[in-house]
Length: 413
Image (cartoon, rainbow, N blue to C red):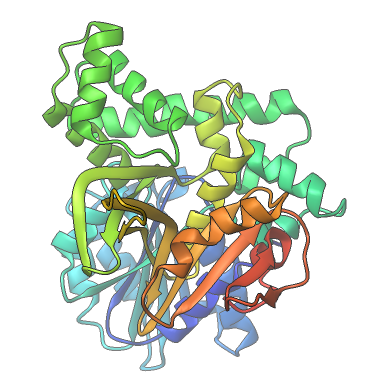
């Protein structure tokens, strides 16, 4: 089964021969190697690139164990570049090579070599990329399957596909599995034996139970405002833990570095500034999140909000939580705070989005529109509702669209 991942493939094609190392990062098992070794490789062949001008080195294979030496890898690549035509160098799981930075920097001096690398364990996180290849590398962040990509694997309609995606997420191998037990066992084992091991080993975390409990707290509270101090107090009152907010902050940062969660900050729309310590935490993959809670806490409204947030990131938007301070009417005038689920920006484009599981009455619609109508600019304001509806602008200029149309990209947002 071929799953098209055009958003990433087109990004790689646009970056060919730009003089930089293309560094493909993302959650383990999200499809980075498949993107490079299958989709991009086939695309280059279809464009007429000779097969012997594509140098593929999967470093996690035993047959390449000798190439995990930085000099051996460099010589292996250099010896295969025998003419002045363009060559494409694919290095998978580059973190298996100690001091790989020197190898990559040396390969950059080969003028006709275009270099692409992937890395997915604790040695190759986004901060390493920024620090070690500043000005010489370009990150391509790969996410688990978007709903549109996941939908390619289905033939049973939107509602069934949506129910499974909410439960099991978008890791490619999960999409190919059939039974609940098979999927649940895979996700649970992947979280505990792969992701946790990476983070714990990298940061030398001693209190593993505390770290696991913090992860479960974040999984249980997706879409809810929180902060390290609040979490610390919760731990101390309920768990009788001595954890500090400094440790909580560090644990959250570790999870974010490992691509397991993303953090959405609160942004004052009128004041044009970030405010307060409270944030929202969203999981990169819903199946992994649900597996942490043994599939016992699947609230569709929060999951829908999380999926929309991830979709905005995949489409290249920088996404925050919108906050508006407005003055209430009546004799007792005071400021009250309204929230817009997402304020998303990409270049000069900005959109404001409310996620609504159901709009069952005119009162519910007024409630969803309340914050959008108070935003003092002319950027597009959108309500995404789960129920099917013909995409339209209402009398207040609010664009209302169904979840299916939004996720399947039937309307350009």
